[in-house]
Every structure is written in structure tokens, then in C-alpha cells.
Length: 235
Image 1: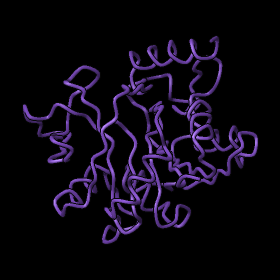
Image 2 (image 1 turned 90 degrees about the horizontal axis):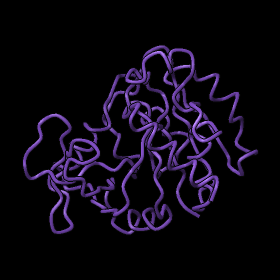
Image 3 (image 1 turned 30 degrees about the vertical axis):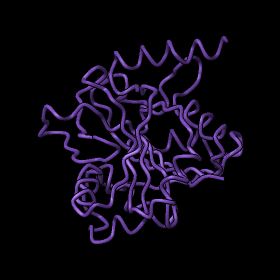
């Protein structure tokens, strides 16, 4: 049994323009299913039982489709940002009562096939406050933002990038609830800030994966992911 998983699905998805004006990104059709259903299927296949959807934009639509998760063999709960978008870190901060002491998290636009149970085990054994999965990207799929060398996460910055950053934040993380202590409950907070604050204290474990990530946050990424998942559905 692995840790509960928080899916960050509250963003406005502005890069997809009119596609997400009346439809949340999580419900975009990908190979005949809402994208979030593909995410849930992967999680269930890897031993996950509890999922917390961190939602905001058109959240009622997501809840109407997923319900309590029974149809997917999962227990699904919902954490709502409220009237003000809280950002990725703020959304997790609000969801802590539903997540418990330790949990995994992934972005609502990422399709990540990996050993979730194994990663959760590495995180818990490390004693660290957080884990970040990283992939040697070399700028191929998106701008690299992580300096990861000799198994150690040295630097993470999405805005101030250096030539030593050959890796990228792959999209799956793990946290102790204590990682969010000290941040105001109802204020906007970027998850990158939490990672950077923890990294400065030596509290982030870097975990390298070897399979590329897929995402639907951009039109190019959406088409790639559609092709991938269509091939899986027919194989």
C-alpha cells in the first residue's frame, strides 16, 4: 500500500486557450477518456487507494465525473481552493487535513508511469521532508531547471536557470505535512518556493527516473499524450 496522492488540478490552464474556458483541463478527452481517468488508472495499478483532488476552476465538473472514486476502485476526496486561487503549494497546504502526515503529489496535467510504491518507500526511508523526482532532460521536452549530480539535488529554480541544470522536475513529489508549517493557510504559495526553502535546509531527496514525462498543459504535449494513450488503449 502506498501513500495517498494529491493531484493538483486547480489551475486555469491558460495555455490551452478556449479549450479550457468551460472545461477543466482534467476532463479534456484523451484517447476516449477524461485525462484524469488515465491518471487514476495508473495510480490504482500501482497500489494507490486514496486520492485527494486539489481543485478550483470548474471544480464541480470534476467532482461530478469522479464522485467518491468507487467507480475507479479508489477513495477520492476533494480540497477546494475557495474564492482565491492558492497556487500549487497553497492548495497542498489547504489539503493537509485530508492527506495525513506523508503523501505523494503530481500535477493535474502530467501522465507519469513509474513505481509509485517504490518511490514512496525511498522517501519514507530517507527521513527527509520532501522528495523530488528528476529526469535528465537536457532541455529536450521543456526547460531544464534542476542541478542534480552524483545522486544529489543541488539546485532547483524555474526562473534563474544555469548551464549546470541538465535535469527537470519530473512532476511527482512527496512531502511530510511538516514541510508546509509556517506558511499561511489562505495565501497563495508556489510549490517551487516550498521546494527551494526545504532544499536550503537539506531536506529534499532527489530521485532520478529514466522514463520521460508526458503532459497536456500545452497543445503539443496534449497531442503527444493522446498518441501515447491511444496506442496503449489499442495494444
